[in-house]
Amino acid sequence: MLTLPSIEASSPSTNELLRACQLKAGFSRVRETNEFVLAHPKSWMGAIIHEIIYDASKAPIDVELAWSTRIRYQVERAKQHPLNQRFADAERWPGYHLLYSGLRYFVRKYEPTCTSRGTSNSSGSRELELRCYDNKLKGRPDYFDSEQLVDYKTGVITDEQSAIAKESYSRQLKLYAAMVHAVKGYWVKKAVLLPVSGQSVVIDIEPEECDAEAAAAVERLNDYNNAIGNGAVKANPSITECARCSYQIICPAFWKNVNESWSDSLEVQSIEGTVTRKPFPIRSTSDFTLSISGSGTVATDDYTVRLGRTQLSSAEPLEAGMAVRISGLKKTSSGNALSGSLRTVIWRLDQIPEVDLWRFDN
Ligand code: SF4
Image (cartoon, rainbow, N blue to C red; front, side):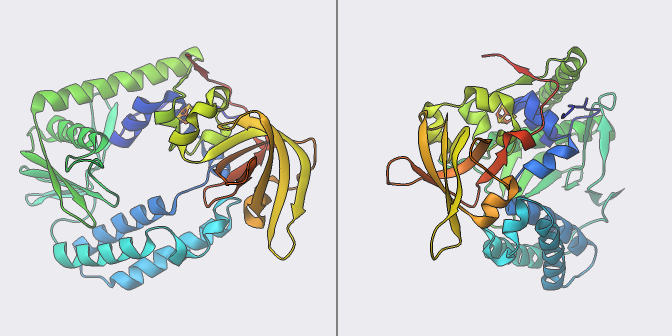
């Protein structure tokens, strides 16, 4: 049984989770969910890149050595995880070479620029923890001084169709600016999104807007904690919010609402049903096929699913009659057939823990 906890203080990233779906924010605070969730190597590389940039800001470092050491450590951790073991070859991680070359360029261009991590002096503050609004808000901006606030990003920072910063990133920087004001007493003049590769984007800082973001973030946190107290955490099952949610496989609200009309928007297929034929090896390959009768983003019907041994391993042993959930499947051109992808996750229903606090409004 997964028990969702209250959240003491909200950071800009927690605020985005609470904005999207209370249940998702709750899941992110439960350690036991990790086993069921497939990680994304891009988020590992993002964390590694942040660490290396901070180290490089203090003193010159060997970027290649720092990168390879941390990547090796992450690979070893991935090998211990029932789902992430598929990411044992780092050079095949999506975006690996691009991010590494972006990091090398970034460090050459910006090294070393300011103060040590967690410290503050006249030349600025780097990763200084800010707590304010009665300790309801917290955060560690990458860098700020009285002129500017800087946030490093490893992914794309603008909307697909324009050069305008993604709304979520813009909100995060406004929230940081409000925190800097609450703790330091001054407003930064501008906020900058600095990508590891590509052009930076400047976000105007309007104090009233930033204060409003902070007040809304505190209200969202209070709403969540009240919901925990009332035993009624709210889920927000929708194509927009669930499409990239890593908790799909364990989320009761997702499986109650997902249907065929979500198929194109989610890009990958999810199915819940009963195994009608146990995994059977396909000759001269390392893959297996199994049959399942179920529904999800696909119509209620019988499907043949082709999976690799690694994908299948989390749900083994798998026999006919067992109930399963599979997400991250691709439709194949031949009728009722589905096949695994790098994002496929399969668990038996008897392995998936229940959630003791949730509800959603249809
Ligand atoms: S799958 Fe959807 S409803 Fe469930 S936690 Fe994620 S966003 Fe919320």
